[in-house]
Structure formats: structure tokens, C-alpha cells
Length: 272
Image (cartoon, one colour):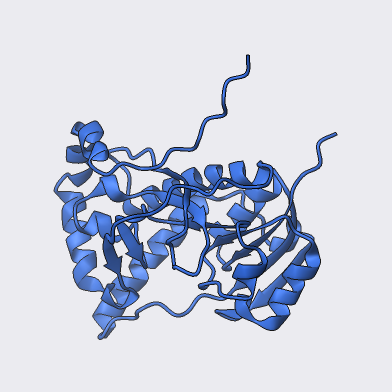
């Protein structure tokens, strides 16, 4: 009988994070989940702006409720040990001790704060991050939102990479784009992207050690900052969606994707 890998997940506390935990638990023994609370979103500079921003995130929540309707109600439904932490709590001495003493084979990151030493050093080569964005083309915050604001659906995707001291800079293990359709909403695209990335994450949850070093990242790309999000960018995004941005992209998808090459999941060598 094959023994499942023993893994940990450092993540946040929304439905999508519980859904990812359940998908990992299907392919590995999910021994530890450290779940951090997210910092507050930009609320806008006026009541009207605040209402638009709330509407955007409420629409996201409704979309995720549809796409991830089978997410467990609690992390404890799929994990042996769960600790609820404040934002950046995964870097506390207590969190490190829990992970070190748990005997996990590797650690997965999705939606957690930036991980630092001693955790990085202790699990060097065994910490895998799911970055919702195509590195190195878009870096920083909301890296699948800004490509759509800029009219570049081809730059929407997910990157699975080693976690290192260089934020989102470790060797890329695999990347994927979502299966965009012309009628998709922004939030449909986001959910599809997460599903594509989780399939890659499952691959590395089940894979044996050592993990491959991945493809070295090069180039700077665009740096996206949390502070730049606001109603102006929401209006630009809405305008592009109404004007047929997705339709235009799908007409020339192959050529447009080729202009931004990604790292596919390695295929197993053939056995003879």
C-alpha cells in the first residue's frame, strides 16, 4: 500500500481556502493547517466608492459560493490539526514549532502572509507556493485583477513555485491558464484560475521527494500594489469587459498566449 505524503497548509480563512485544503487532503495526509485572518480591503475614500468596492467583493463571494459549493464548513473537517492565527502569524515561534514538530514532508502556501526564516530555512526545497498570477509578468497583489484591467487576459493564470527569501521569486514548478469563455465574469475567471492551480498543487502534494528545482525566474514584470486598487480601476475593468475584451482575446488566443510563454507541468518520462 502506498503511504500518502504528510503535508501542512498555510493559508487564509475564506471559502476558497477551505476548498483548496479539501483538495489537498484528497491526495495527501493534511496534518496541519495554519489559517491567517486577512487584512482589511481598501474601503474607498467616500461612501459611494465604498459601496462599489463592497459590491465587487460581494459578487466575488457569490461566485465562489457557486464554484466552491462543496468546500468544507471547517478546516477541521479535512485536517488533523488547525490553528487560527492573526495576519502574519505563520511566522511566529509557536507556528514554527508546530510545523517543525509535526513531521510533515512539505509545506504548501496559498493566501498566507510572506513566509520568513526560520521556516524557510528549515523546510528549504520543501515549501511550495500557489501564486495567483503568472510570474514574472505580474507580481505583487491582485495579480489576476490587473491583467484584465490592462486588457491582457493572456496574463491571467497561476504559478506554482518554490518559496524562497525572494518573494514570488523561487523556481517555477508549473503554471496554468484558466479555460476562459466569452461569457465569463471576472469572478468566474478567478475561480477557474484557482481550480487550475489547485490541480497543479495536488500533483505536488502527491509527488515524491525531492521536488525538482523548477525553472528559474527572470525579468521584472509589472509590480501590482494593494494601494492601487480602487474604483478607477474597477471602472476600467468594467469598460473592458463590456467592450468585448474576452471575445477579442479568444479570437487570437494561441498567438496572444504565445507572447507570454508559461511553464507547463512536466510530463513523466515514457517507460519502455
